[in-house]
Image 1: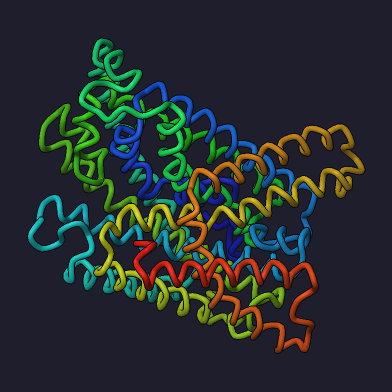
Image 2 (image 1 turned 135 degrees about the vertical axis):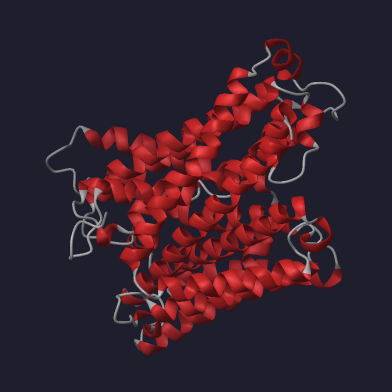
Length: 477
């Protein structure tokens, strides 16, 4: 899988990283989240918007991998190249923080899945015992990853295959049970559901679509391990197409098997409840096993990505040099330690959250939007300036259009998320800036340019407003 002793990853391994990163917790929660918000008509519109936007973003990652082969660990490095040191730091920190929050969500989902069978013990995934189990899992994975990246990516490839099987089985069963009359009844909203405008229905699905597409950049993050540079873009597109097909099927087919109200009312993970409505209790058990495998595999992939982002940012002097340290297995050990300490603290904090499940999901989505926006913006700059297009000038106009659509899409996602989540993200960014100051002082470098100072002040004001809102209860997590 890794292509020999050099530790380089093949196209198949890179594609498995993309699929493994994307097919995690989110896909198992699509039926309930969508049914709560909209019917099939709104879902089709939502997936058209999300699919188009994320496809354009995937094409930006592909184009940048080809035109800027000198830039490794592209998610934050592209932001730095296009918009300066502080924006590069915010991109790296935001991506890392979003990944940490996503890992917290995975453990909450594991707890809620076990809570389906042991409700008095695990509850909704934020009970005391659920948190203890999560902490044990976090540190078990931690010490396994310290044994080597190649070993971990091999395990991820196996898990990726194992977790796809329950999803495909569920899709086939629901396709066989497809009831056109039921689908038609649900199409424009169904019965016994609150009336909402179509715009509100689509808006309410947007953050979950962002969450399930997280990981599209998995191959780009691991660019320094690729056997062939061209494989990075190919793996991104292959992973995107495969996973999008699965997500659309998982979303739409349940509408043809049960009333929308019934689907909206099932317990998380909602795909388990949706299949249970069709085949009985064994369906919920079957999918729940798939959830546990899937989430553990996705957690492994994202733990690797978290550590890799901190390591690469430190190598490029955007983070303190402490995080450049590697152990004998080439694992960025210091970065991994910080990642899992932060994940553990967030897991503990879920004990006091009223809805840890959806809150962590939405926070993960919003936190990752800033890095995506900066990557799309850099795609525009590269195409406009013609960097790397010397031998392919005809591709410039096309790639610039793709990048602009990706920019518009990510801005629309920020608007759809709402002011609350944007402000809460700045609350986390403000203390994170300490790492940036630390790194700049290590280099005896100027802290901010005038433009960067404005960006910091905007972040600081947002953080102070958010902190005040949390303290006074105006904003509730």
